[in-house]
Image 1 (cartoon, rainbow, N blue to C red):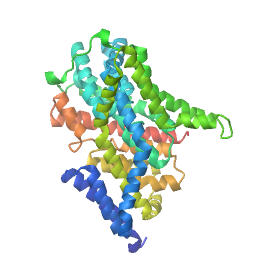
Image 2 (spheres, rainbow, N blue to C red):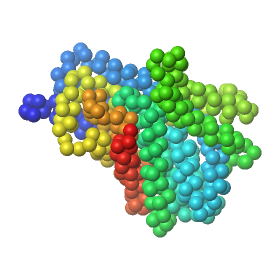
Image 3 (cartoon, rainbow, N blue to C red):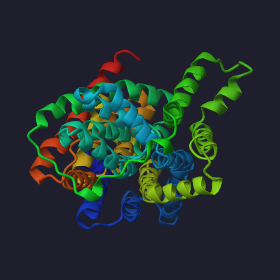
Image 4 (cartoon, helix red, strand yellow):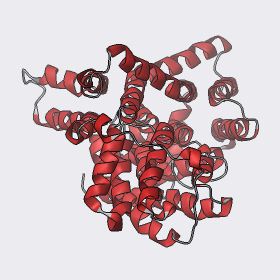
Length: 443
């Protein structure tokens, strides 16, 4: 590659470095940082000035058009699952069935079940106080028992739709939402087991004493929805996505049912159906007026508004790279590297994660770089979603808000947070990559 041919790649690299500096050091909102960096990169790559605003708008519109319903509906569903007491019911049932000796495993299962519909930040705020109450009542070590739940929620956040980054990656790589979720569940389980209950056994020496105000008062038993209703409602999107993906494989394109299956398999349709089902089972059927359910849904929009803006900004950056043709040059360079594309995707996401802190930004930015390999190569797009998603949760440290949430909620030192939270995030990221590589030999 000549010096002239390498200039566009240097411009893209400089744009990513500028993005990191603006977000981490300058504390610029990621949306504004993405737009400014995208515009600067477009000029540097020779895009006509008149075309730059249109490219940015197109990139933002394309990605939001594909993701808005899924992400917003997912946030609404998760909020209702938590606010209605369904999350507490699931947690209590799992703890009661496992007993004190297997409490860490119960917490891991709770984190996964509740973590699928509940976004990580929302889940942390709403579920962790309930976990504290359960663990405190049982007199068990908080970090040992509580960390597995967070490991499960973190893995769900990085790997499983309808969470923002994996959902965005599915759209970018034109992957199947259902297959990605199915493969993601296969990969997630060993990552959660190793990074959660097994790893947390070595953390018994960490003393955590949460502040009294961070321990929630559990709702009375009579106010909680039934266990079956709670589990079915929380997991309905995952079930529908997996079933529709299986149906898409079985039903041929010339079948009279093909159109109906395609409609039912659409992620937007799945999420809307799940949302309406939840409004009935966790709201109206339990005597809650529709206006109260809608109030919860409206509050959920506020939880994800900033996430949607970040995703929109990443779409602008991707569009600039594609419109200027740099994506083809990136593909040529990456294909020459002596690395498995899945490992390469993981490494790019992990590097950005360490620099930026945000798993969502890391995943979506890595997608812009890796996309040419997926579009023009033989890489399984569903597995690339998972590989990048795994890299995006690697090594959470002091530039990640979740790091400080763990430290403050569990009331532990920075050193102990690094020993527990940071190491756990690194373990699940590496194990998940291993699972992806094994799965790549099968599918």
